Length: 340
Image (cartoon, rainbow, N blue to C red; front, side):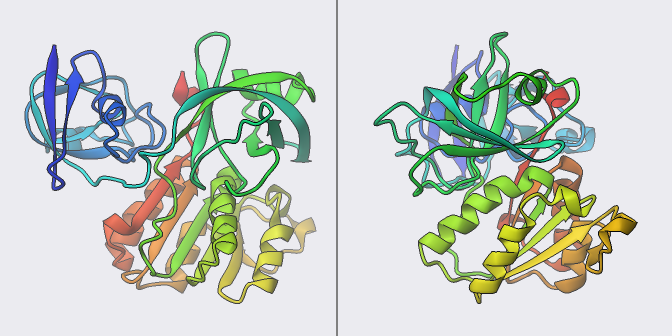
Protein backbone atom coordinates (compact mmCIF):
# COMPACT_ATOMS: atom_id res chain seq x y z
CA UNK A 1 0.00 0.00 0.00
CA UNK A 2 1.20 3.48 -0.86
CA UNK A 3 0.88 6.61 1.30
CA UNK A 4 1.44 10.29 0.60
CA UNK A 5 4.08 12.07 2.69
CA UNK A 6 4.01 15.87 2.75
CA UNK A 7 7.05 17.78 4.00
CA UNK A 8 6.78 21.07 5.84
CA UNK A 9 7.75 23.84 5.41
CA UNK A 10 8.80 23.14 1.79
CA UNK A 11 5.43 21.76 0.69
CA UNK A 12 7.09 18.92 -1.21
CA UNK A 13 5.37 15.55 -1.21
CA UNK A 14 6.18 12.01 -2.27
CA UNK A 15 4.76 8.49 -2.18
CA UNK A 16 6.00 5.93 0.34
CA UNK A 17 5.18 2.24 0.35
CA UNK A 18 4.24 0.66 3.66
CA UNK A 19 7.29 -1.64 3.48
CA UNK A 20 9.88 1.13 3.01
CA UNK A 21 11.15 3.77 5.38
CA UNK A 22 10.20 7.41 5.00
CA UNK A 23 13.83 8.29 4.30
CA UNK A 24 14.25 5.62 1.62
CA UNK A 25 11.08 6.79 -0.13
CA UNK A 26 12.17 10.43 0.05
CA UNK A 27 15.59 9.69 -1.46
CA UNK A 28 13.95 7.57 -4.18
CA UNK A 29 11.93 10.65 -5.15
CA UNK A 30 14.94 13.01 -4.88
CA UNK A 31 13.60 14.70 -1.74
CA UNK A 32 16.64 15.69 0.33
CA UNK A 33 15.81 14.76 3.90
CA UNK A 34 18.90 14.98 6.14
CA UNK A 35 20.48 11.70 7.21
CA UNK A 36 23.67 10.06 8.36
CA UNK A 37 23.93 6.43 9.42
CA UNK A 38 20.59 5.18 7.99
CA UNK A 39 20.32 2.63 10.83
CA UNK A 40 18.75 4.53 13.73
CA UNK A 41 21.97 5.30 15.57
CA UNK A 42 22.95 8.91 14.84
CA UNK A 43 19.74 10.97 14.97
CA UNK A 44 20.55 13.11 11.92
CA UNK A 45 17.22 12.26 10.27
CA UNK A 46 15.07 13.19 13.28
CA UNK A 47 11.96 15.22 12.51
CA UNK A 48 8.43 15.95 13.70
CA UNK A 49 5.32 14.02 12.72
CA UNK A 50 2.60 16.65 12.34
CA UNK A 51 -0.12 14.17 11.42
CA UNK A 52 -0.47 10.51 10.51
CA UNK A 53 0.83 7.24 11.90
CA UNK A 54 4.11 5.39 11.56
CA UNK A 55 6.12 2.79 13.45
CA UNK A 56 9.82 2.53 14.23
CA UNK A 57 12.20 -0.30 13.64
CA UNK A 58 15.16 -0.92 15.99
CA UNK A 59 17.07 2.24 16.92
CA UNK A 60 19.38 3.63 19.56
CA UNK A 61 17.82 5.33 22.60
CA UNK A 62 20.40 8.10 22.25
CA UNK A 63 19.13 8.87 18.75
CA UNK A 64 15.45 9.05 19.74
CA UNK A 65 14.40 8.98 23.37
CA UNK A 66 11.05 7.67 24.54
CA UNK A 67 10.13 11.21 25.55
CA UNK A 68 10.91 12.56 22.09
CA UNK A 69 8.88 9.80 20.47
CA UNK A 70 5.96 10.55 22.80
CA UNK A 71 6.19 14.21 21.73
CA UNK A 72 5.78 13.30 18.07
CA UNK A 73 9.38 13.04 16.87
CA UNK A 74 10.54 10.26 14.58
CA UNK A 75 13.69 8.85 13.01
CA UNK A 76 12.77 8.77 9.35
CA UNK A 77 15.56 6.31 8.49
CA UNK A 78 13.83 3.52 10.41
CA UNK A 79 10.18 4.66 10.44
CA UNK A 80 7.59 3.11 8.09
CA UNK A 81 4.25 4.76 7.34
CA UNK A 82 0.85 3.33 8.27
CA UNK A 83 -1.14 6.23 6.82
CA UNK A 84 -0.66 9.46 4.89
CA UNK A 85 1.83 11.64 6.75
CA UNK A 86 2.64 15.29 7.23
CA UNK A 87 6.17 15.70 8.57
CA UNK A 88 8.23 18.70 9.59
CA UNK A 89 11.86 18.47 8.58
CA UNK A 90 14.66 20.56 7.13
CA UNK A 91 15.40 19.66 3.53
CA UNK A 92 18.85 19.52 2.04
CA UNK A 93 19.48 20.82 -1.47
CA UNK A 94 22.28 19.91 -3.85
CA UNK A 95 21.98 16.11 -3.90
CA UNK A 96 19.69 15.53 -6.85
CA UNK A 97 22.27 15.49 -9.67
CA UNK A 98 24.70 13.03 -8.06
CA UNK A 99 24.04 9.39 -9.00
CA UNK A 100 24.24 6.63 -6.38
CA UNK A 101 25.88 3.57 -7.89
CA UNK A 102 27.59 0.30 -7.04
CA UNK A 103 31.28 0.28 -7.90
CA UNK A 104 34.04 -2.34 -7.83
CA UNK A 105 37.41 -1.00 -6.74
CA UNK A 106 40.96 -2.24 -6.26
CA UNK A 107 43.08 -1.58 -3.17
CA UNK A 108 45.83 0.78 -4.33
CA UNK A 109 47.57 1.06 -0.95
CA UNK A 110 47.13 0.51 2.78
CA UNK A 111 49.10 2.63 5.22
CA UNK A 112 48.85 2.43 9.01
CA UNK A 113 49.96 5.70 10.60
CA UNK A 114 48.96 4.31 14.02
CA UNK A 115 48.35 0.82 15.36
CA UNK A 116 44.57 1.16 14.98
CA UNK A 117 44.11 3.52 12.01
CA UNK A 118 44.48 2.53 8.37
CA UNK A 119 44.57 4.97 5.46
CA UNK A 120 43.04 2.99 2.63
CA UNK A 121 43.31 4.16 -0.99
CA UNK A 122 41.01 2.64 -3.59
CA UNK A 123 41.45 2.70 -7.34
CA UNK A 124 38.23 2.88 -9.37
CA UNK A 125 37.79 1.23 -12.79
CA UNK A 126 39.42 3.06 -15.70
CA UNK A 127 37.42 6.08 -16.90
CA UNK A 128 35.06 5.81 -13.91
CA UNK A 129 35.19 9.03 -11.88
CA UNK A 130 33.35 9.13 -8.55
CA UNK A 131 30.95 12.04 -8.18
CA UNK A 132 30.33 13.10 -4.58
CA UNK A 133 30.21 16.08 -2.27
CA UNK A 134 33.08 16.56 0.18
CA UNK A 135 31.91 15.03 3.46
CA UNK A 136 29.83 12.19 2.00
CA UNK A 137 30.43 8.47 2.54
CA UNK A 138 30.25 5.10 0.78
CA UNK A 139 28.98 1.74 2.01
CA UNK A 140 31.11 -1.35 1.49
CA UNK A 141 29.06 -4.37 0.38
CA UNK A 142 30.10 -7.42 2.40
CA UNK A 143 29.58 -11.04 1.39
CA UNK A 144 27.03 -11.68 4.16
CA UNK A 145 24.82 -8.85 2.90
CA UNK A 146 25.90 -6.41 5.60
CA UNK A 147 27.26 -2.96 4.89
CA UNK A 148 29.93 -0.80 6.49
CA UNK A 149 30.11 2.97 6.00
CA UNK A 150 33.22 5.14 5.63
CA UNK A 151 33.65 8.75 4.55
CA UNK A 152 35.82 9.92 1.70
CA UNK A 153 38.82 11.78 3.12
CA UNK A 154 39.88 13.47 -0.11
CA UNK A 155 38.04 16.23 -1.93
CA UNK A 156 36.11 15.32 -5.09
CA UNK A 157 38.24 17.51 -7.38
CA UNK A 158 41.29 15.32 -6.80
CA UNK A 159 42.33 12.82 -9.44
CA UNK A 160 43.50 9.43 -8.29
CA UNK A 161 42.36 6.92 -5.69
CA UNK A 162 39.64 7.49 -3.12
CA UNK A 163 41.05 7.89 0.39
CA UNK A 164 39.34 6.44 3.48
CA UNK A 165 40.43 6.47 7.14
CA UNK A 166 39.45 3.29 8.98
CA UNK A 167 39.76 2.71 12.71
CA UNK A 168 40.19 -0.89 13.85
CA UNK A 169 37.28 -2.16 15.93
CA UNK A 170 38.41 -5.43 17.51
CA UNK A 171 36.00 -8.18 16.51
CA UNK A 172 34.54 -6.09 13.70
CA UNK A 173 33.92 -8.18 10.60
CA UNK A 174 35.15 -5.55 8.15
CA UNK A 175 37.88 -3.82 10.15
CA UNK A 176 39.43 -7.13 11.24
CA UNK A 177 39.64 -8.02 7.55
CA UNK A 178 41.19 -4.65 6.68
CA UNK A 179 43.85 -4.90 9.40
CA UNK A 180 44.60 -8.62 9.20
CA UNK A 181 43.97 -9.85 5.67
CA UNK A 182 43.42 -7.08 3.13
CA UNK A 183 46.25 -6.66 0.62
CA UNK A 184 47.11 -4.30 -2.20
CA UNK A 185 45.29 -5.19 -5.44
CA UNK A 186 42.42 -6.91 -3.58
CA UNK A 187 38.95 -6.14 -4.92
CA UNK A 188 36.19 -4.53 -2.85
CA UNK A 189 32.70 -3.32 -3.78
CA UNK A 190 30.90 -0.29 -2.46
CA UNK A 191 27.78 1.78 -3.10
CA UNK A 192 27.52 5.54 -2.83
CA UNK A 193 27.79 8.37 -2.29
CA UNK A 194 25.48 8.84 0.69
CA UNK A 195 24.92 11.39 3.42
CA UNK A 196 24.03 15.03 3.91
CA UNK A 197 27.18 16.05 5.79
CA UNK A 198 28.67 18.58 3.39
CA UNK A 199 29.42 22.29 3.24
CA UNK A 200 26.48 24.69 2.95
CA UNK A 201 28.14 27.06 0.51
CA UNK A 202 25.30 29.58 0.51
CA UNK A 203 26.38 30.76 3.98
CA UNK A 204 29.27 33.11 4.73
CA UNK A 205 29.34 32.47 8.49
CA UNK A 206 32.59 31.49 10.25
CA UNK A 207 32.92 27.72 10.66
CA UNK A 208 33.86 25.57 13.63
CA UNK A 209 34.99 22.11 12.53
CA UNK A 210 34.83 19.57 15.35
CA UNK A 211 36.41 16.13 14.92
CA UNK A 212 37.16 13.19 17.16
CA UNK A 213 39.44 10.39 15.99
CA UNK A 214 38.83 9.38 12.37
CA UNK A 215 35.98 11.88 12.26
CA UNK A 216 38.79 13.98 10.80
CA UNK A 217 38.34 12.18 7.44
CA UNK A 218 35.24 13.91 5.99
CA UNK A 219 36.25 17.21 7.60
CA UNK A 220 39.61 16.93 5.81
CA UNK A 221 37.70 16.53 2.53
CA UNK A 222 35.52 19.58 3.23
CA UNK A 223 38.49 21.75 4.20
CA UNK A 224 40.47 20.74 1.12
CA UNK A 225 37.40 21.44 -1.03
CA UNK A 226 37.18 24.93 0.50
CA UNK A 227 40.85 25.60 -0.19
CA UNK A 228 40.47 24.43 -3.81
CA UNK A 229 37.31 26.50 -4.31
CA UNK A 230 38.95 29.57 -2.73
CA UNK A 231 36.25 29.81 -0.08
CA UNK A 232 37.87 32.07 2.49
CA UNK A 233 35.35 31.93 5.32
CA UNK A 234 37.10 31.95 8.72
CA UNK A 235 37.40 28.37 9.98
CA UNK A 236 38.79 26.69 13.06
CA UNK A 237 39.41 22.97 13.35
CA UNK A 238 39.22 21.42 16.82
CA UNK A 239 40.49 17.84 16.63
CA UNK A 240 40.14 15.68 19.71
CA UNK A 241 42.06 12.47 20.40
CA UNK A 242 43.20 10.46 23.40
CA UNK A 243 46.96 10.75 22.89
CA UNK A 244 49.23 12.58 20.48
CA UNK A 245 49.84 9.37 18.54
CA UNK A 246 46.11 9.07 17.84
CA UNK A 247 46.17 12.40 15.97
CA UNK A 248 47.44 10.62 12.90
CA UNK A 249 47.56 13.60 10.47
CA UNK A 250 48.40 16.37 12.91
CA UNK A 251 51.25 17.63 10.72
CA UNK A 252 48.88 18.17 7.80
CA UNK A 253 46.51 20.29 9.89
CA UNK A 254 49.47 22.25 11.25
CA UNK A 255 50.65 22.89 7.71
CA UNK A 256 47.22 24.24 6.73
CA UNK A 257 47.36 26.65 9.68
CA UNK A 258 50.79 27.90 8.62
CA UNK A 259 49.87 28.71 5.03
CA UNK A 260 46.17 29.63 5.26
CA UNK A 261 45.54 32.89 7.13
CA UNK A 262 41.81 32.21 7.60
CA UNK A 263 42.37 28.71 9.06
CA UNK A 264 43.20 27.83 12.68
CA UNK A 265 43.96 24.42 14.17
CA UNK A 266 43.47 23.53 17.83
CA UNK A 267 44.36 19.94 18.82
CA UNK A 268 42.89 18.66 22.10
CA UNK A 269 44.03 15.53 23.98
CA UNK A 270 41.86 13.80 26.55
CA UNK A 271 44.46 11.29 27.84
CA UNK A 272 47.85 12.88 27.12
CA UNK A 273 50.75 10.61 28.12
CA UNK A 274 53.77 11.89 30.05
CA UNK A 275 56.02 10.94 27.13
CA UNK A 276 53.93 13.19 24.87
CA UNK A 277 55.27 16.21 26.77
CA UNK A 278 51.99 17.79 25.73
CA UNK A 279 51.65 21.53 26.37
CA UNK A 280 48.49 22.07 24.33
CA UNK A 281 44.81 21.85 25.20
CA UNK A 282 43.43 18.94 27.22
CA UNK A 283 40.00 17.63 28.14
CA UNK A 284 36.89 17.12 26.01
CA UNK A 285 37.16 18.63 22.57
CA UNK A 286 33.65 20.13 22.46
CA UNK A 287 34.29 21.84 25.79
CA UNK A 288 37.40 23.47 24.32
CA UNK A 289 35.15 25.01 21.67
CA UNK A 290 32.79 26.31 24.38
CA UNK A 291 35.68 27.86 26.31
CA UNK A 292 36.88 29.72 23.21
CA UNK A 293 33.45 30.55 21.77
CA UNK A 294 30.86 31.16 24.50
CA UNK A 295 28.68 32.79 21.83
CA UNK A 296 28.22 30.68 18.68
CA UNK A 297 25.12 32.51 17.47
CA UNK A 298 26.95 33.76 14.37
CA UNK A 299 28.69 30.48 13.45
CA UNK A 300 28.13 27.21 11.66
CA UNK A 301 29.40 23.98 13.24
CA UNK A 302 30.36 20.81 11.38
CA UNK A 303 30.95 17.93 13.82
CA UNK A 304 32.07 14.40 13.04
CA UNK A 305 33.15 11.51 15.24
CA UNK A 306 31.88 9.28 18.00
CA UNK A 307 28.20 9.69 18.93
CA UNK A 308 28.83 10.87 22.50
CA UNK A 309 30.92 13.78 21.23
CA UNK A 310 28.45 14.74 18.52
CA UNK A 311 25.45 14.48 20.86
CA UNK A 312 27.16 16.48 23.60
CA UNK A 313 28.19 19.21 21.17
CA UNK A 314 24.72 19.43 19.64
CA UNK A 315 23.10 19.75 23.08
CA UNK A 316 25.61 22.05 24.78
CA UNK A 317 26.29 24.39 21.87
CA UNK A 318 22.57 25.08 21.53
CA UNK A 319 21.78 25.31 25.24
CA UNK A 320 24.85 27.21 26.43
CA UNK A 321 26.46 28.91 23.41
CA UNK A 322 23.40 30.18 21.51
CA UNK A 323 24.12 28.12 18.39
CA UNK A 324 20.98 27.95 16.21
CA UNK A 325 20.07 24.25 15.88
CA UNK A 326 19.79 24.60 12.10
CA UNK A 327 23.46 25.65 11.94
CA UNK A 328 24.75 22.39 13.46
CA UNK A 329 25.66 19.74 10.88
CA UNK A 330 26.91 16.35 11.98
CA UNK A 331 28.02 12.90 10.93
CA UNK A 332 27.99 10.52 13.88
CA UNK A 333 30.33 7.54 13.43
CA UNK A 334 28.44 4.50 14.68
CA UNK A 335 30.48 1.40 15.46
CA UNK A 336 30.14 -2.02 13.84
CA UNK A 337 28.21 -3.12 16.91
CA UNK A 338 25.63 -0.44 16.15
CA UNK A 339 25.21 -1.72 12.61
CA UNK A 340 24.48 -5.39 13.29
